[in-house]
Image (cartoon, rainbow over all chains, first blue to last red; front, side, top):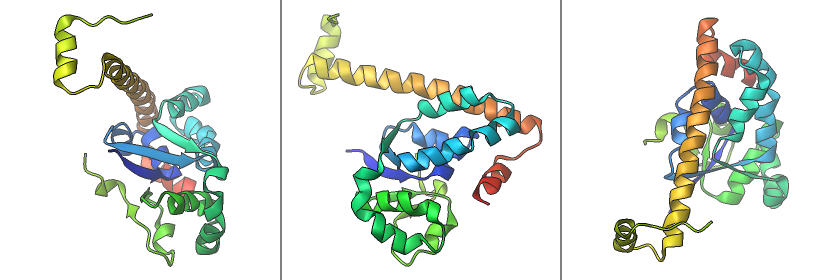
Length: 133
Length: 68
């Protein structure tokens, strides 16, 4: 049985930039899930990554499409949005969706975002360094 | 198109406890697709990494800029 991990935007971006998460994301021991909102957040930074790296926006978009991610819509975790909002709205509103998905999945949240450490709720937070291949 | 397995492969499929040949073929295709996706993704992310390096930009600074 695969270990399901809720994956945050900074992890996907780090993989795109050639970081260690790219090795983990293609490890078949795990199953990675993220929200449509989170993926949109990643796509928002395609122009910036393209400008800085010189790689075309089209190519970067193509790269994202190859990632083995299960992408779910807000409808999938709608019952947890209110709880997530209460927990993190004062810290960063952009984190509501990924937190709601984590609350629905009740598994692990993979993120390098320190905001999740400030939440007054026990989160099974994974950092990239915690994942051993 | 139906895929025919050689007797040698058929024997291995049976020995490794697959319910049928179809299950083995499905798994093999999925694995190969994952390998191809990985290959393509790594080629693109490597281009990005090298592109940043060429300009003296560290990935950490890009991530920091994105967060702020």
